[in-house]
Image 1: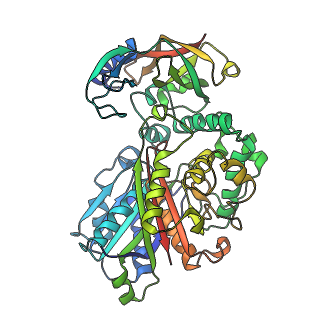
Image 2: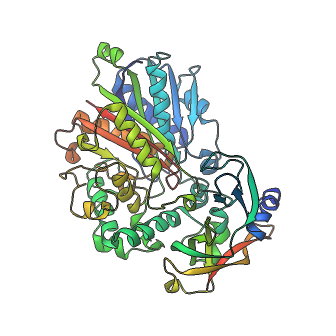
Image 3: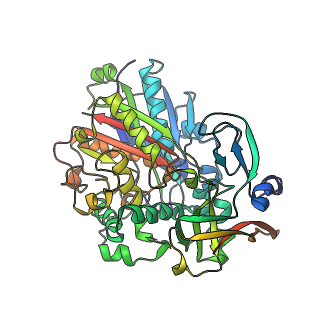
Length: 381
Length: 129
């Protein structure tokens, strides 16, 4: 098995990109990543996307993107695992290179959510259609059920949930690619319009357009290129019940825990070795549960751990320096690779005002649905 | 919900039909082909208890198109007295009446009217007891 490195990354700005199409934003991010890598070709590509069919009526985007990127006839494949589509796509790129099958692989993710589709409906297709959505559940509703149970069991407070959004908006205000480059206060988050009690619109990630891409190669090949090289040390993926109600403990995200454990083991590192993490804060409560499952704090302590500033840029374990899904934006299929783009920039020391000091080991965690799938990667410069 | 799919789920939606693993006794709603607890493939057909307990709840204020006229409405995860969990609306109550741990009873109700054709979709909801 060959060691694999990320040698190039690129992303579009996230937000409401009315002037650009699905294919345009993917090609823009891909060209940036290829240019950053300094390679003259790619051998194959993977495209993560949740549901371009529902958002813009376009499937078969693997071939579409290869065509418009001008790289046909190379093989291209679309990967879908709801909101962790591109995180899962990264694993396929990793395996393709580590197996020796290809030398240079482009892995990207894309979603265009603002072209007029019913985003609440489209996103809800990641939940159980027959037994959750049929009853009128929405995604904010599912995470609200988790939040209420977490508050009841562990004493997590409304203010602690808000602290996640405040921290992520603070970081996102320093990210030129973020959808919302502005700060919010605890009071604004807590007093914002309720979406699904106890979650407000400022606990929730937005509806976004965007794309992100990385170029992978073997470590040996990367050395010949003299490209800046960030190794992928570990990769873990896991699944859980699709319906939230089927889980014994609805405050536990078992897929996140398992995907983290597998990635830590493969990388030979522990949670305390991680210098910077990008995690799937689709709702404020999600970040609290995830930092518990990844072992950054004990189960049930994610609220106070966040409130005390441990996950801030200068904290013990900086989480979501990019602004996370909350502030940077969440074009669902693009999110997993956008997390990798941020961690690579952090490890290269190129993250500008939001740079985490002396970061050498980084982690990304990307999740689908209400936690039915999760993928974790660990990187080292 | 296209009609073949709607018809298929009627035993669960109308009669709360569930399946109990012959080997380990775990109850599944809806029925499955493989027991997620022990891997066994043999099940006895059974029924959910008609009462249960609220595990968690929320009030939906932004809904998909089919439910848009119903907001705000309460959704809960309920554990039936015989041990299976499901997601359901809780109706005929005020949001402030809901609490984790409260008992509910399942009732047969209209869920929503579907799209332009106006097909009425039925199923279970819960009321506080």
